[in-house]
Image: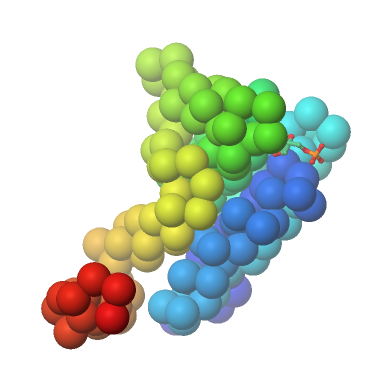
Amino acid sequence: MQTGPRVGVIMGSQSDWDTMRHASEILAELDVDHECRVVSAHRTPDAMFEYAQEAAERGLKVIIAGAGGAAHLPGMVASKTHLPVLGVPVQSRTLNGLDSLLSIAQMPGGIPVGTLAIGKAGARNAGLLAVSMLAAFDPEFAERYIAWRERQTERVLANPVPGS
Ligand code: RP5
């Protein structure tokens, strides 16, 4: 049985935490051991390379990387690891996150980054997608993920009247 974090949640700045905490919260809700770190492609490039290079041997299975503006972190991390990297575009102040989205999505062929939606929804979905990736190889995660989805469906069905 593996111990230690399976998912690494990294972000380019402390200022990204308000978005990226939603990925962490989903992972915690689904009882997935994970770690959260600030690792910047531009301000701490050596630390970023080290993180990406050591991730697999430390037992991580998926990396969620959030960044805003010239959001190079997910792509650069993906270039240094074979692990799946899920990119979350953080909503920037100047261009509302369109800059982040395009920086993350427009990867050259050969180095994939799974790009999620801008902001909170993207961070939540990155957490869920990471769990569904783990679930493909571990029935315990599959059970938890399916149960989480069922609870969500039940909540929506139980409240069909808008504004109630
Ligand atoms: C990016 O620059 C970070 O991911 C962050 O979204 C953005 C702004 O960073 P701060 O100036 O708020 O630290 O690298």
